[in-house]
Length: 247
Image (cartoon, rainbow, N blue to C red; front, side, top):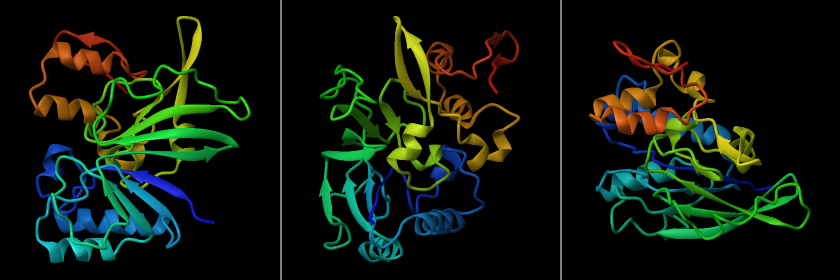
């Protein structure tokens, strides 16, 4: 039986992504091979994978074809800012900027909004969370682009590889990574973006999380960093000389 899987921000062939996102690989060749191997270990030939943007920054068509040929499954690309305007024909089943689909987990139907950029107000964002109610539909939004830095928001999930052990993920995995929080007396769902940190970058387990390091590298000011970090359940407060503390 075929499955639906989701991923984003592979950045195949992009040398600088190793530095920008602290990806723990010695070279871009190792990076690309690990992502391809991880993909094929998880994705069967009959599966359908949605790449929510930034497949590669490579512009050479033959190299792009070579990457795509190595990947199992049928692939639909929701374009990101680093995807070229004209990919070679036939490597993707479909190329769009935005897509709405349906997926099912534990008998519950979900309307899934796919767009590379994190949307603050998507269609259905203010609808009731109807999980557990038979025949009812809850709308969620899957995005990329932020490499784990988007502000945590109920029913919005970053499916970029930096958050998911450099591999595509199913809706089940996404929803099982959630935690619940009470807000204005209501139970809401949100993703714990640290839940996979131990799996994909052990070098950061006893240090700051890689998202924090990323903000430092890009020169984010303390106010902006606080907006991200204070929403994290691992946030341990501030120390005057040491900065933000987590883990």
